[in-house]
Image (cartoon, rainbow, N blue to C red; front, side):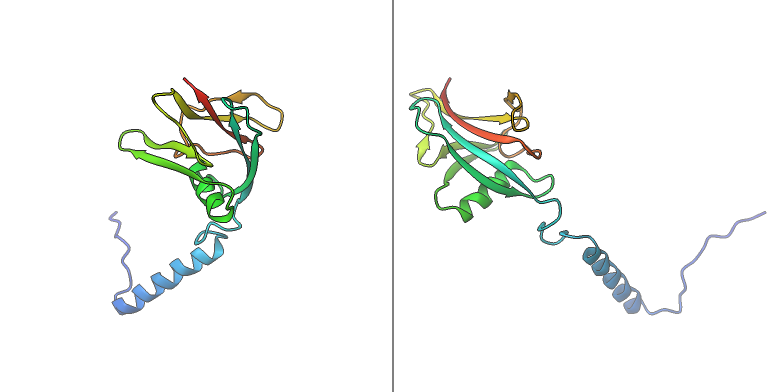
Length: 153
């Protein structure tokens, strides 16, 4: 017994099939909420606390929106665009990615052995961890408190 391979109808013009494929793709994008903008789909709020362990200045706490599975750097950029009180700078290392340089005008200094450390408090009253990734790769979870700690090494 031989099996024949199914074939597509050849009587439909190629342009028609391409247009139908485009419409079906567009319809699928419309059915999945937030796929085009990232808004509304799995958006969550995170808390970002700025701590200066060297000067003992009062902590500053900000609230930022982040999309589902979004990285911390994206939330920080969005916060900087929407809140004039929050500013940060970073450099891009070719091997290791973004490196946080300054927050709200306070910069790390190699001569003084100071830097910005990324810490995360798991849950509202949980333990504080030092992630093994930086701001460019860390994906905050709901109820995490992100801590940017200015300290010495």
